[in-house]
Image 1 (spheres, rainbow, N blue to C red):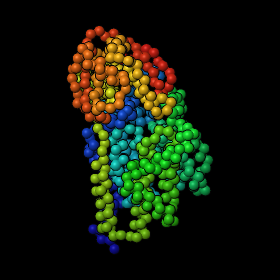
Image 2: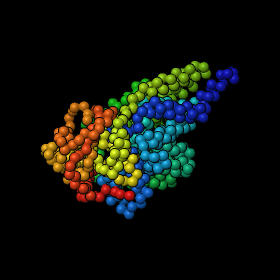
Image 3: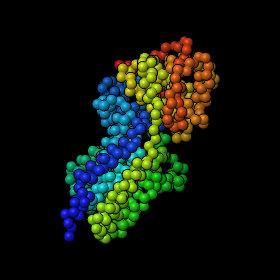
Image 4: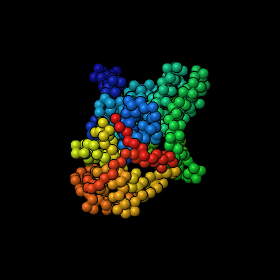
Length: 543
């Protein structure tokens, strides 16, 4: 018989309130450990996810009659947007946070952290509902998983999409098992929200479809299936918009026949699983799935989780862009699978409460140490350039060359509420490097000599200030090399050097162009990586 002393720890282990509190504290602790960064480290996606939030909120407040024209004029002033690349779901939430708290990297990172709380909440709800009350600790385990720590402290779409997709799967399963209309409505709502945030979330619809097939004899309200499918299709509206606005970018994600016939296409994500989950969790999750399949009382749970994992690992390779984070959704599935194994074994082979408490504490300490050791990259020194120019040249345009252009443009906009400044990128005027119809890198140089660089700066850039990011030696476009040579000429005066930390970056040298400078009223825009359309003499946006 359990005494009051032994029942107290057991009660704490099963308390939803305690589990939720510890999970939130774990997320906050991981954020504090990695507080040195602003979350904009992933070039060039992170700063553009932040910049898109600013743009969408500015667009909504302006209410222009011609949104595409507004976007082009906005880009002409702040060239770090990609509004047609991803759906606007996350950006609208992020923009609202900027409106309330100010525009900064930490605010954007805080929004991602809120989505992380949601992901952990649904992980806890799943474990407690279908496994055991004590299984809710799965949420805390997810919160300190190294891969989850990395992306929950980065301004990326992976964690927001993960949270919304978990909501889709959770409510879809509840509808399958209860036939309650409210659960169906929530599942469809989360599906639309997830597709409106990240295209890769479409995999959740396949998972839900297979679950429906698996449990079709148990589904009572079959008349709701058509409604569910029709509403879920609304989430594909952003995909259609991307095909129209950025056909080159959209089409290069489609697979070719040779790509589909390559063995490494279908083995890539299997090989990347250890990097996503870590070997300990991968081993525990695989063991939990094996136990679930072997023991009759846990086969249903194992079937749900196994379908979840297999669809992601086997379906995602169809998209030619490959990265382990694209199947980040397998991480909570493996966490839940590991918990299945633990709960199943503890029920069949009971252990004393004292040993159970000791095991929980041991796993918690080891997990927190692993999460705390996770390396989240940091980019520093770029904001200082924007702040210096805000004080020294509040109305002047800036010419920038470097790999961290998105971060610089974001902070220029953050410090420019009146739309008085403008940024011109060397990667748009002097050269271009990037994908076109495929993900292979294409380099195009528009200058052949330092003299031609200086001529373009005087006649087409309209920038008195030039910021050049010095990095460790390596392969670089010819246009960047020619710009470096031009900056050593008497036409330029070195004003100040800003130390920085980034991808090979050492400092940003700020120069002033002396002598004649032709005024620029319009900017020629083209986006060869997205569309073949060209836009001559676009006038930068004003307030």
